[in-house]
Image 1 (cartoon, one colour):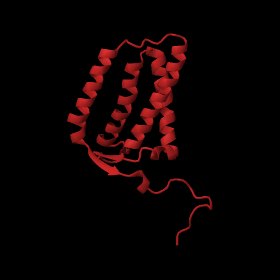
Image 2 (tube, rainbow, N blue to C red; image 1 turned 90 degrees about the horizontal axis):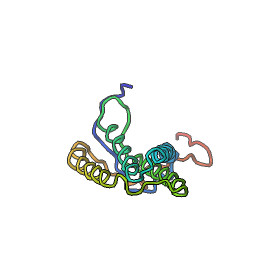
Image 3 (cartoon, helix red, strand yellow; image 1 turned 30 degrees about the vertical axis):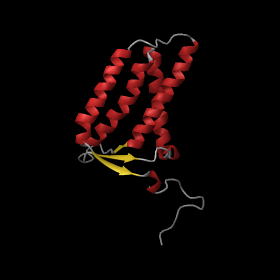
Image 4 (cartoon, one colour; image 1 turned 90 degrees about the vertical axis):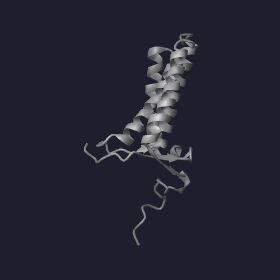
Length: 155
């Protein structure tokens, strides 16, 4: 690993649809679908799983921004797509479990609300001051898809 020191920078992409136009974004989404689905199948409580699929990508991106030697960068587009994947997996499993009448909708509500409040307080009070948020607009980024006429040649 040993890829240098973390600089605490996190890229915030304001173009929410941009990651849906990249293979990288779709891979992030696909990677978390099984996590959301398997977590709900295991505990059968949607709210704690929803908390998990929201908190896990945030923790991953925070770690990438603050831990030396990972060689990774914090990016809101990654968090967006991993959360979407986790929620999609949760939704798929919720439909399957609801058909079988085996979801426990009200279990874990109080604990999950406390965990969401703690996540919000930690994020705004501890994590936010540690990060340097770099705002970008996804439309200003260069296109990541190859052209139809083949690779461009340098002038």
